Image (cartoon, rainbow, N blue to C red; front, side, top):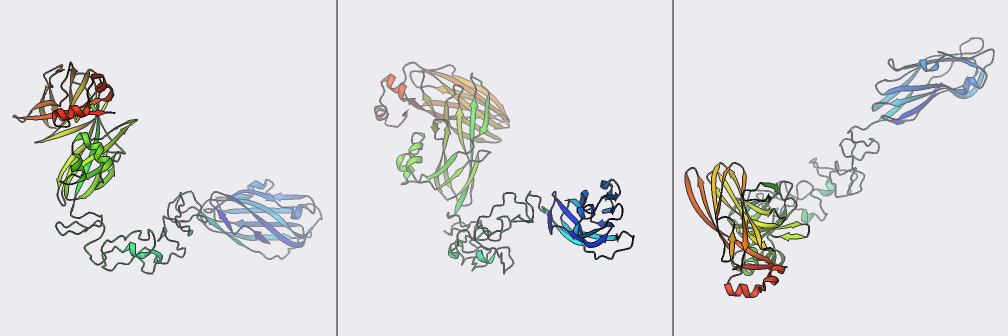
Length: 509
């Protein structure tokens, strides 16, 4: 008797095993088939045609499903011809359906076999066992091991960038074709993409290897003859070397936080803050003789600087509205490009002189006013505990009355009084507004009306009190005008600028 079975099966799938015989003068057969019930479960048993083709049969048990005992891992079945008929030839005694439940080598053991003729004499017959290899999903990524390009590592995407049959998740050279995965050094990097490391600092000379992206873990050493120079190495100041291989020399570190302040209506409006995500930020050199310096470093020219000067570094704000850059020591202006539907504005902040290894934290601020307009904002930071005073960089005039919002954020208890001194021809609804700020966000807002105006910046005075100490601070809010309002008033931007000798008025298209 023989067991006909597949050589391989797969977890959670079924397969069929046939118990077959090749003999003559057979009137009855009884057998037991043992199996590993941790790997297999028997699902169904059906009587084969070997005896049935010779005549009517009866089975033991009569209910053939009772032949299955998955608890014991055994099938026991008997079948006999009724009367004096006998079977002769090749045929199937029984067909058994199994379900694979776990990976492993499942042995099917045929034993306690009794074969008789119609005189109930024993017929000698040779027995054969079988082994079925059960393939599973060892890493649980939903890909069967036999087709999984990383059978021991979870990688449902099955990415294989270099098409060598080994998935990126377990390829020791994911960008270089190397199906053999040879790794003579045993360092986890395949021979096909091993880097040259002359100074033994753990970082090789990728550009000299001649294979794109071949240094998966330890490449891109910008000086392979200096063991103190490698990616992310500590930056040593005043040595004029790019110690950390980032293209910058003697750099400091600039962290930007971009915030949108949404201000309601009224003189004491509510104000909420949310991060500005996905905003492009650029750092420009503003030292004497630079492109930005020659254009003019003021809010009126941030757009011109953005479009005409080459940035030193750039980044995109993350989900928290933050980004961090390392920049060579120097004097910089930081500008963001804030896009809201068809509106584009350019908030900016001076980074001043950034020194080697200095950590600098700056804010880029935008205010959304109650009328839906967006304006770039500037800020002043007061220490003791911390107070941020956030005010418009400029107000874009499009109507007879405009909103002038001011936002305060604090750690600790502060009192702020804001006094407004509009230019001649402007009238504010209040001379001053005060707010108590105690580890929270507060805002005040003036309504200023144009009654025949002199288009110059609005002067602001702050009285700030903290821990019994009072100080005064003065600032100016720039003035801009929509093209429609300028035409309505008959103002010429160039003439207005020349008349004042300073570019105080800007007309927006």
